[in-house]
Every structure is written in structure tokens, then in C-alpha cells.
Figure 1: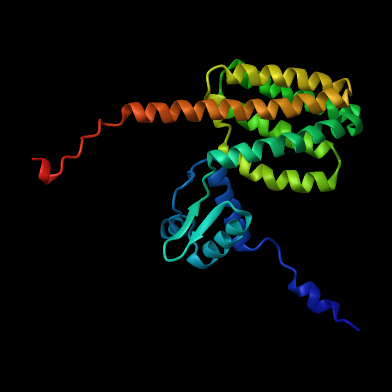
Figure 2: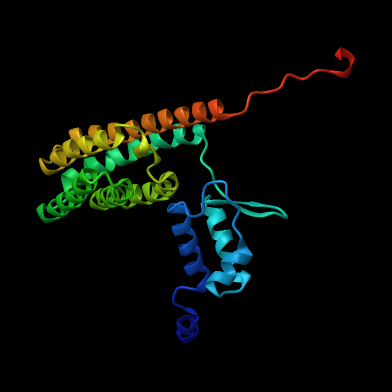
Length: 244
């Protein structure tokens, strides 16, 4: 017969490297560790008062999740989503979150929908104040709650996994002119469809809301690239020695 006492003694609360992994995720999601940045293991270990061993174990976890990339002999670099990544990720999330909205409209209780309305009010307040960071946080809370209210563990599992990568963008598209106003208008239509339990409309609106985010992000990136090109010093034509 199995000695259960040994099994019980092996169960521990959250380990140190898991706590460190959670801290690293927060730094990445809040862009305090920016996309493409190298993780300074020595500095973080000193700041957090830990050895580099749990930090390295935590980085292995994040590498498995795709949030950082381990580079031999150089360390770990925060994953940077490319234009292609965004073009592929957003349509998938639009499908998944659309389905979340569909199922939430059918399954959520009246009390849960009232809670969702309160989360929407947070969005309204942040939008009125033009506080992009607060709006992003409220938006994340709203979408996460819709996902939970769908009550579909398989849908929740895959959506939660991909949401990590969405968070790495940290709502950059909200900085595109007019996007904040468009986003809150989309949310108003969405919350109305959810409260009315119009599942097909809620699904369509959520899908279109995600795709609108992609289009705004593409426009922002294009403008940034154009600005960087305009700011670059003019190139000096190369003249070979033979031509001198």
C-alpha cells in the first residue's frame, strides 16, 4: 500500500522560481522589460535578493511559454512579436474571443452580466479621462471576464495561452489617433449585445473589435516606420577609389 505521508510531505506551496516567473511575466506584460530587451540576470537577482538559480529556472519556464528566447552564451531575450506574428495572432484571437462572447451571452447569470456592466463602466471612466494605461487595464479585465463567463474550459485554456502574447503588445494600438474613441464605441455595442443575450451579435462584435485592433496596430507601426525613415540621416553615396 502506498505511504501517503511521503506524498503529502512532498507537496509544497508556490516555489521560489514560480514566484520569480510571475514577477518576470509582470515586467514583460507591463513593458518594463521591453520586447527585444535582454534579461539582466545579475541585476534582477541583486534587486530581488535571490541567487541566480531560481531566476534561471524561472526563465526556463518563460522560455517554454514563448515569452523569452534563450540564446546560447548570451542569456534570455524578451520575445518581440513581428508584423507577421500580429497578422496571424489577431485573427485567431478574434475567433476565440468571439466564441467566448457567444457562450457568455448564453450562459452568464443576470448577476454576472451586471458585474460585466460594472467593468464596462471602468472602461467608460478611463476613456473619458483619455487614460490609455487605465483603459488598457480595464479592457484586459473585461475581456478576461468574458472569457471566464463563457464557462468552457477548453476554450478558456487555449484563449488564456494566446492572451499572454496579446498582453505583450500592451494595447499599443490605443495610441493610434481615434482608436480609443472607436474602442469604447465598440465596447458599448458589445455590452449591449451581451446584456440582451444576443449571442450571434455579441460574437460578431467581439470578432470585429479584435480585428479593428489589428488594423490600428498596423497603421501605428506603418506610421512609426515612416517616421523613423524620415528621421534617418541621408545616406552618403559610396565612391570607389578608382572613381576618385
